[in-house]
Figure 1 (spheres, helix red, strand yellow):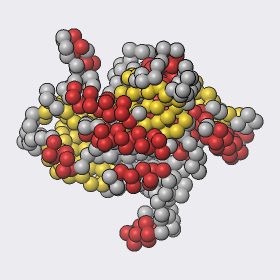
Figure 2 (cartoon, helix red, strand yellow; figure 1 turned 135 degrees about the vertical axis):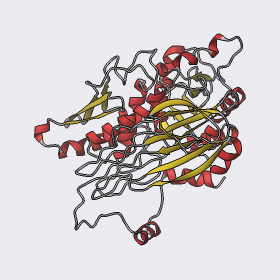
Figure 3 (tube, helix red, strand yellow; figure 1 turned 180 degrees about the vertical axis):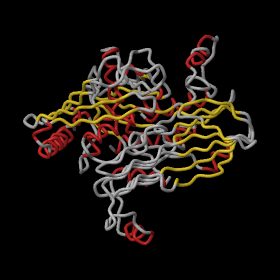
Figure 4 (cartoon, helix red, strand yellow; figure 1 turned 45 degrees about the horizontal axis):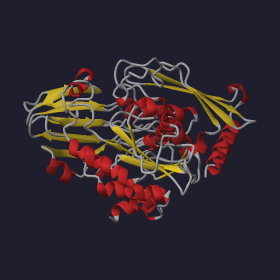
Length: 491
């Protein structure tokens, strides 16, 4: 894993775009000779499971046509990609006289300006490719520099055993009436349904994740490539295991996945998928964790915000509330589950872009109440200083993040545009609008769901400030994420 972490450090130091250098929207990993995930740095969960599919697709496509020094660039969703802005750079590694790669290294980075001005306008997306010598991006030099950085940046039994032990433990707790089957469902804001039945074989210690009953693919862009579902499953399995294991293909060996052809989770090759990576992936995690009765739903969204004009653009994902669990309150104002990026520092944001950050704080009481409370979302207000186009791609604006075991659901998010003349306009969950100088975008992100029923004599209420200080004083951070953060902060 240390090699993958070093790859990430090189990539961050070498890149020049805000997305990779500041927001850390990238992932690095090492893959075996069969293309299976061997080790990864603690980067972006939604990337890591899908990158294995990308490596194995290229192995099948290129067969024996790989040579020492080759570099493969791919972003196709049907070839293991997550969505088009995520570029994966794959490098085969050879040893001595061995004619085939002994392993692969790969990095996946988010290039925010790929596609066009507003990602929701599918007709406009195809226009740049019709013009001679047009790259389809306003920041070509940034894209090229980041790709060069990715190129420069460039065993399983333990994980398999841990997953089988998890399945064994879960199967023992299931009553006979449920026939070793865990069921859950949830909805996207447009009403599309994701259904899951996890059938556990207690003898073989295997599980079938069957998504039969999931809604058909949609006209818009939150369809999800198959690889994203694998990312969600491998992330949830790893999160439910109570000790450190390597995140690799061993996690998936005891698992069979059934995805209905033509559904939201296995769409046709020409389906729009950019939102599947950042929206539907979060709903998949909610459904899986609900099936295992693990914890309440977190904010279920990455809150994708983009603005720009013909010369430049900016992209960010914004934190929200985490769901509570059987023994913990949900964290407030954090990135959850399938995302793991930072927010751009206010000083950098205001220096590089024509905006003013008016407000950025926790959204009090947006988390669901319970014996353990869900985390609060955030409020973020952006004032625009010139004419731009603002786009939002968000979820949980209609369906609240669910509570569990009697806990209350978290509050929905909301996207509001306040015009310079004082008018307030509800933008909905997904829209693109022109903004003028003096206009202000007000973002309220969802809170997490609560866990358990709160009673009058419940001792597990929200801790006081003194209790929080005592808890932090006695808590010692550890693990790969802590080590990685210390490396980042020590730069």
